[in-house]
Image 1 (cartoon, rainbow, N blue to C red):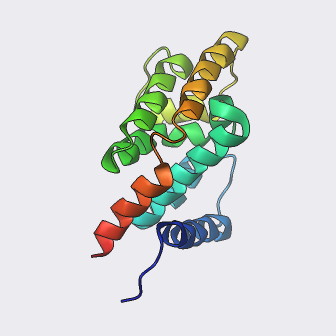
Image 2: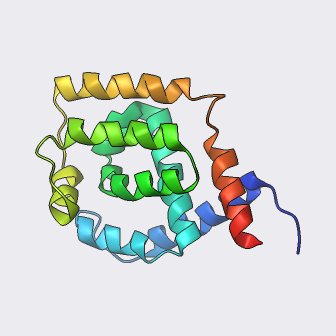
Length: 157
């Protein structure tokens, strides 16, 4: 079997997942359809897709962007995936965002429906910005590419 770098493996899985999501016929205004499409990905594709989308969102516009682009509907799955790959500090940051955006502690479908159309207050933005700083400080301490890639490589063996 050919040896593949972590970056190439993640890139291939993300490309496949993203292509499937883009090709799926669903109403982007309907969170249940979008969620179902992502749930239909293979385990590794889904893991890569949600972690890459988290990282892209937070890197581009912070946790506020992550929630305002509706990717927050995947926060519980992202926390699980991050813990699975042993990215505990990142998982803690995402977990810390939940009480900020979901102070009434909605669960499951109620949570997803609420977060899908979330409008953040200035106070919530400030609180999320503090998490952005924590996320940025992970650089050099917790490398998602290495952790995710190593996890996926171990799955392939």
